[in-house]
Amino acid sequence: MLSPWNIDDIVAELREARGRSKRVVLAGNRRAPLPSPPKLQRVVEGIYAALFPRHAGAIDHSDEGLAVFVSNSLNEALSVLIEQVRREHAFIDESRAEHDSPLTPDEIVAAFARALPGIYETLESDVRAAYDGDPSAKSTEEVLLSFPGIRAIVHHRIAHALHTLGAPVIARIIAELAHSQTGIDIHPGAKIGGSFFIDHGTGVVIGETAVIGERVRLYQAVTLGAKRFSIDEGGALVKGQPRHPIVEDDVVIYAGATILGRITIGRGSSIGGNVWLTRSVPPASNIVQAQVRSETFDHGAGI
Image (cartoon, rainbow, N blue to C red; front, side):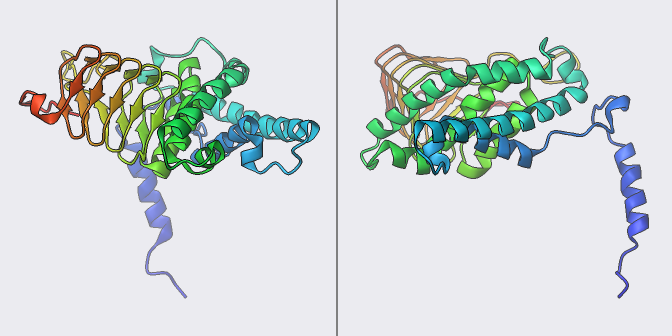
């Protein structure tokens, strides 16, 4: 049966359309293979298996059995990762040129591998914070196996390390994998201290330049966003400037709160549900809706 479309004509027209693309891609790199989200999902699963082998399907729980499982999982994950980082470094657009990593892909992955014990220790503090902070949690095993906030922070700890080492595209893909799975959107550039807990989590947004201290707890639909964006002389957005909140240690931010701009939430503060906050607050503050002053936004300012 003949198809109702002419595939050769469509393929030719698509090729011509791609040739007219305004996206910035160096001409010599148009044929370079791009990083693969499905393969990076495998990387995350392999690293998770190396960090938490009992929770990732290891059958032999003896020391020797776990060592073999971890070795196999980690070797496979790092082998796939190094190829993906090589792919990222093979396509360089103008926006990356001034931020390019001094490390080679092999050096990035080696440094990342060496960082895994520290990542594990931080994640252990996150798991404990989730267990201690949620009365519904019956065990840390339940937390690791089923809590979306923990899934998101596992991805973030991995993504942030890669972002810092010089693989920002790989890191962003890993972050977006968690976003699609949990509804929690954390930019890999965000700096987040240990014992971090996101309860429920759906709709949480944490921007690129946010800085979060130790023992911070967020509930669903919290936004740590930018209030406005700087524009250069040509009208383009200025990238990389600090524009998201600083949240100090021991802060709790309740559901639906929106905190915008490079402001500081002082240590030990509590930010109530549905609060809209665009000013810094001192340590030990207790902010509820009635205390928040009204502000207007114009010229596209906002989240």
